[in-house]
Length: 95
Image (tube, rainbow, N blue to C red; front, side):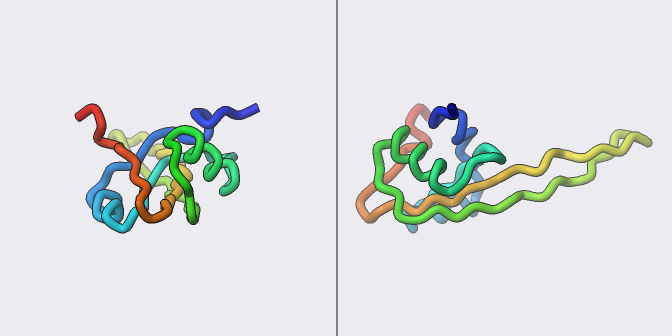
């Protein structure tokens, strides 16, 4: 059985994701096998907030080269979480 910490891998902190925090939207990298219901339950369990909407998308892999050796980065699953008005998540809590 998956725990909430198996579903949510890490928050994604980029310029675009930081701008969306003002709109109460938070971005997380999630397990590739997790569905929207599992993601919603994990966020509500970990952060004690009410999730209104969950959007998921796949980040495609990229080709990387080291000299003549060609490899690929893994593709990743991303989730954009919309919270209820008044709820927030402190991602930068320890900084």
